[in-house]
Image 1 (tube, rainbow over the protein chains, first blue to last red):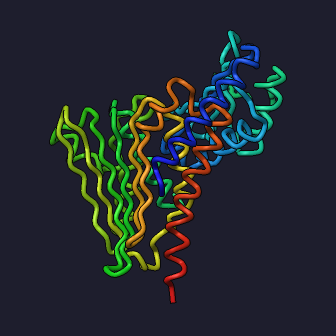
Image 2: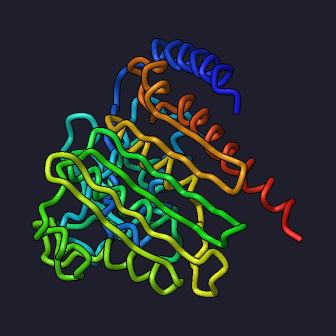
Length: 122
Length: 187
């Protein structure tokens, strides 16, 4: 693997990203949190997170932060995904397989409509 | 867990929870010695002797939400079921090192699975950690260090779609490359 060439590529990627950013209005910024404790991983959380990342990439969704968290004590509801959209209240979803994750990104993160059937009441 | 790469993800999550700044994941497949070794090292808060002695016990955890921790016992059991070894060493304030080895061709040895996804999820999910990923199959090696990447990006997040595509391609291609060389060598 040619690392030097690779980092040069990355510099171009950075400039491209910056350019796109300045064109996008900074609204609807969202934070997505994936539960990645042993319980989450065993229930398929890794693929749920992959689906989130794949969707962001495919749909070119800007300004979305994706992080992980450990077990939050709802192991039977895993994989768990939490969404904080702008200043809105955090929504916790349960049993989020990759297809559900894609739906949440499209309907909740982009369109602002909570996917009620997968909401877990804390 | 159905894949070794899921165990790796799980153990690395422990390192993050232990407030590590740097986490190194090394996977080595050695076909000549019929050995598969996984080493996860962190500079987190570590454990004292008492905690260390209990940590492979399924009824120990640092979690406060529930009292049962299964990550390390699962991993230990997986290694030992495949004629392998499991070792964990830790120093309070210095960090922890977990090593598991497997007889590579053991019938019960679970597949590596998508190590690419494990690496990408960790990198993006914990952008403040300095990640070192190494995956070696005999003479071929994939080596990824997040530090030069983070510096080059200079504030642009990993979850930016353009950056994400770059990282995914980089990791996928790197892993596929070493795995395909290995396949060609198989009789």
